[in-house]
Amino acid sequence: MEMIKTVPSEIRKKVSRGKVILAGFGAGPGFAAQKTQKFFPPIDFDCAMAWLEGFRHVIKRARLEFKDGSRMYFIGSEFERYEPKHSFDGKETK
Image (cartoon, rainbow, N blue to C red; front, side, top):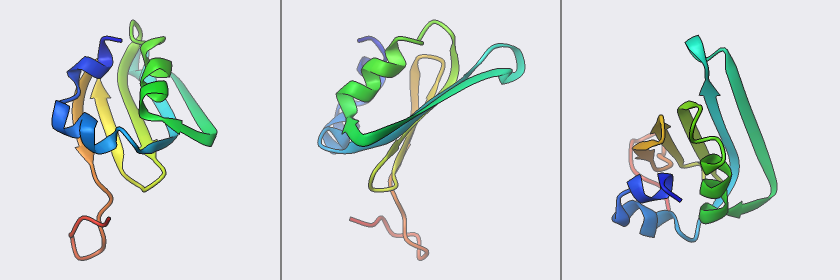
């Protein structure tokens, strides 16, 4: 799995026990093609990354949504950012 290697180790550690409820990506010129997969029951982070990896060659942008409301974003097959769930006061929620 190459995409998972682009996620910084401290973030991988933080999400390793998290459950993913949705994965999606855009591909093609102007993101003309897209695919979204909902997971019920939610799946482990490693399994979600394996699902994305199968489309690595066409991904322009991708995201994972976690059960706790946090999200992870990729540009192409490279990690872009992780957004923890935040409350309305701007503080990260547990």
